[in-house]
Length: 295
Image 1 (cartoon, helix red, strand yellow):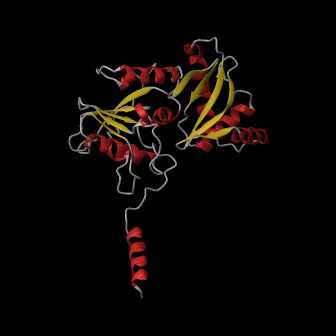
Image 2 (cartoon, rainbow, N blue to C red; image 1 turned 135 degrees about the vertical axis):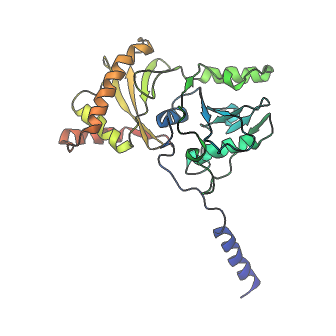
Image 3 (cartoon, rainbow, N blue to C red; image 1 turned 180 degrees about the vertical axis):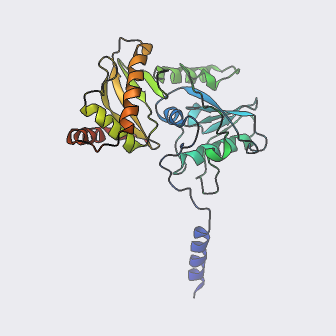
């Protein structure tokens, strides 16, 4: 065998014996407290933060007691180690692998290891050896989202120069007004232009949620409150996010009663074991045609 052939075989062996890329995980936040709010922060909430804690004995060396999870950071950085020692991780910065849980966990670990005052600007591709959030985090701690009107949380106690202030103002102008509703987990009112919507991350797998909505739609009970029309659904991270268009003149809190009533109807439809009727199958097909996969 010639030298070129031997080198080729050696190169192939080196490639195949390297780190195994992380496999695709359809529902990456499953098992975490607040799974639906992780998805909401990743996909439909523009400006929000939440605090996480490490499981006993799982904090990376040098890690602070808590880490701040944010929707997005400046320049879409995956993470930032502030000069105060605070760690911020942005979860809308995109995927480095097929497992979002590993990507975010890796961003946390890289930010802890970074020099204070430094951002994490890119993520390596996660592998099977990369920790998952489910490995690192205290699964008994709640995941409570704080929705912000803008991105002042980027700044903390720091003062911005003129360019930085202008960048923050541009980001704030692009933020969609969003309010977290109390009547059901992970239901959010938002205003986009002159129209208003309720977007709600459902806790069941996509197929179960789609069938439940189909039962309600076929029965004529899929409206939200007084006339909120079901437009369709997003799909993300293995969960369904139905979207209702609501009265743009109504205040966000006026939809609490409608969301509460829909919550009860949905839970009843989810527990039904009866086969779908012809009308319900037709409604399900219509809903499937109006589903959009976010990522």
